[in-house]
Structure formats: structure tokens, C-alpha cells
Length: 332
Image (cartoon, rainbow, N blue to C red; front, side, top):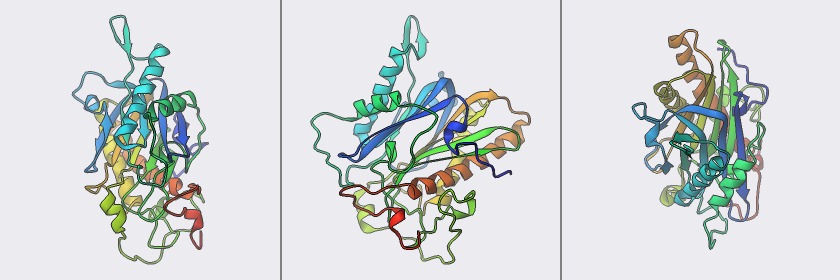
């Protein structure tokens, strides 16, 4: 497979998609919205044991509604589900949504991660996620910041600060695929105490440091504090310009979970709510359905692994952080 990223190396290399991010640095949290210029086909697959979601049941292949208007990733645990509601409100005001008589109902599935124990001030009087969702929708563009941004603002991993990551690939078939992820894992993205990423074999150029693979395996580190707090969950999206059915999107999301396993050790634990949405704009038909879908799934997993490492690589320090950034490590 040709290892060539898109021009921005972002999920928005898929034409017709935009990403908006908003954050509150005092609370240490944020929201990320994936918005389509038009409704897109979507699927979802959950492999973590503690998910928090909105409107995911309707993404099953046997359900009536096949297309959605936006997807939302948010911090805030259950409080963060309000972000998707505000995005739906905003889209309705724009005349977007599923037509029901003379009404429009925007379809906005969402997922949340737990970032309530990360050193931020959580003593709000009013749930802040509705406003953050509005701000993220308004900021939607083809370019956006990685690292301490959007839904990854307050994210953490076992040993380092987490973040928001993205990556893309151009397939030999000409299809584009991209990944977007907020990394808040119980596991670690790096090997032991060093700066080498588990995802290093999949790196293109120096997109997350160019250090290459580690030469030793120190065992799997799961700090007791992270385990006891249940303060985890990595949530992501893979997107393509291919023409896919809802069932094929579900399979794409399933395949993309391999990227979690390649980049985070351990992943898909009972204390993570690991979830991946898949989105297909339908701009480019499949020429060989069997081969093309196989390669799309493989590329989705590869993009996701790279996006996870890029999230950690781009994290930046802030006041009252509970963990260091990757850039603080010796040898980084």
C-alpha cells in the first residue's frame, strides 16, 4: 500500500469534511465536531467496556436513518453529551437535518471521554458543554490544531498528557481516508519511560518525532491511580470519500480499532469506553468492492495508530497539569 498522506495529513483531506474545536483551559476540557458539507453515511463500533454515547443505536445497519449531519467528540463524561445537543440546535437553525414533514431533525451522534480528574476547575454552576459545542460548530474548518485542542484538551494517558490527533492516507485506488482521535487512554502510547511510540512502525516521515521503534519491551505499565479512577476512554472517527453502505461503514469502524491496539498498550480495557465512528461521503464509488474495502480497513487502522501518536506528540503543557507532555521526556 502506498504510504502517502494527504496534503494536510488531517481527516479533512477527505473533501467535504470540516473539523471544529473549542476548549476551556480553566476547566481543562473541550469539544471537537466533524461536520459534513452534506449528510454522510456513518457507522460505529464500540470495543471499550465503559462507553458514553448519544444516538449510536441508529447507526446500526438495520436502522432506518443511514446518514448523519455531524459527529461530536467531547470531554466531560456524561456532562459532555450536551455538546452534541447544541450542535444539533445549531444545524437546525441552518436548515440542516432529517426531514420529517415540515420539520428538520439534525442527526448528531456523539461520544464522550472522562476528563474530570485532570487538575482543571470543575466547579461550574452551569454545564459548559452546550456552549463549547456551539463554539466548535462555529469554528469548523479544513485546518485545526492537534495536541491540547478540542476534545483532547484535558485528556491523559497512563504516563503522559493525551490530546487530539489526526492523520490521512491516499490509497492506490485513489480513495482518501483519514482519522481523528481524542486520546484519553488507561494505557500508554509510549514504550516504558522513554519517548518511543508503540505506533512507530507506521510513522510516515517524522510526523511524530521520527525516533523509530524502541529496542526493548519493558512490560505493560498501568499506574494504579489511572486504574482506580476509571478516568479513561479513547474516542475517534475514521472517514473516507468512498461510497459505502452503513454496513460497510460499521466494518470500517471495526477494522480501525486495530489502530488503537497498535498504538496504545493496553487498549479496549473494561475501564475504557473505546469507540470509533466511521464516515463516508460517497464521492468516489468502489471499483473493486472486495479489494477496496479490505484496503480501506487496513488504511483506517494505520491512520488511527498514527493519529494517536500525533495527539501525544503535539500535546502542550498547561497550569496544574497532572502529567508531563511527551516533549518533556529525555530524548524527545
